[in-house]
Amino acid sequence: MAATMELGSDTDPKNATFSISDEDHTLGNSLRFVLNKDPRVGFCGYSVPHPSENRINVRVQTTGVPARDVLKDGLNDLTAMNQHVITTFERAVESFKANQGMNELSMKSGVTSQHSGSVRKP
Image 1: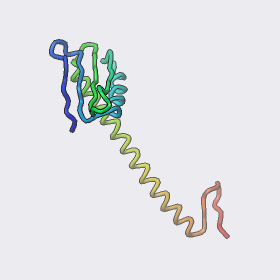
Image 2: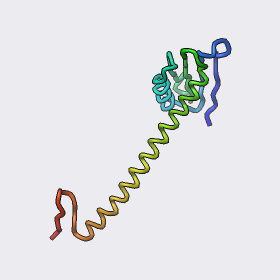
Image 3: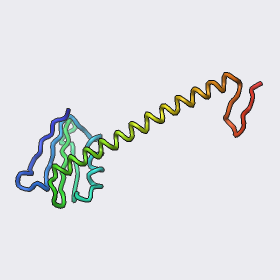
Image 4: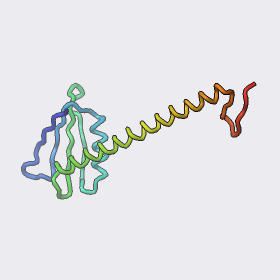
């Protein structure tokens, strides 16, 4: 699990920079995208301090609510999106496998359905 450190929000909770270790552009860009869609966010950006460091800094500036709460909501939204993608992918794989089984049965019986009608192989 990645460690997160919050920087600079003691004086102004609506502006904060979060340093997240063991993460890179994959999380940074996805999180930036999700947070920038939130109407409570005035600004969100991220950076990788150095290519050899496995860490990102995420800057969040909100319109009034604490940046920490918005970050948590953004991470939860991103998790829900990822779960939706996983579920959709798994259903598609199951459907593909089921159709492959039907296609194999059709091929063994000499019937293919590549065209609008069934064609019997000679």
